[in-house]
Length: 228
Image 1 (spheres, helix red, strand yellow):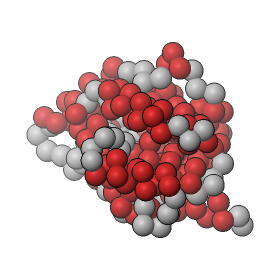
Image 2 (cartoon, rainbow, N blue to C red):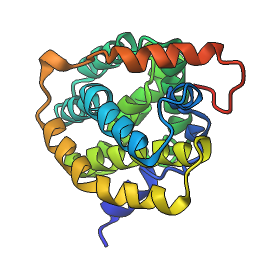
Image 3 (spheres, rainbow, N blue to C red):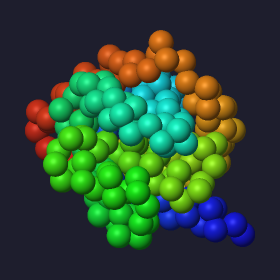
Image 4 (cartoon, one colour):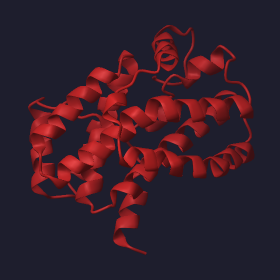
């Protein structure tokens, strides 16, 4: 087994202690409104949000930041982080992304000593970068010599299994149905990865209005299990 694969498993582990388990990214609103309430509706939610939100946002940013790391273009990384911040309209989603990025840095910066990670740490301390999760994920993937395709696949897998885990708890669903859904979703994740390798810059930061509205509504739910 290549060390890069082990690094990918570590970096994209859904159980990485950065607080991802405490966020539903708007899914809790969908379940409380009984829009997402079954295996089929979860499957539809996943395919739609991965296609129309995660792909043109986080996945495209990972792809572009990875390329900027290859070219040692720090200014481009800063620019992409700013665009990422501007594209996250719901406040809770924007703050969650920054918090996950900060916690990711606390884990990996002491372990990866490169010029880029040192520059990143200074930038976060001086607040010259927002430090969104997908931006830092791409930086660490590059510095760990993970191939771009594998890094994006790992991110899609992490995102999909996080949504499925939350759906199992919120609806609730059986653990078996969640795993069957994940297995059937894998070819779809591979297809999305291929699209992310050549980002369409006209779609970068595209807003999926319905998902954004549900994420904004989450702030005012009567009771909540998740932070976003």
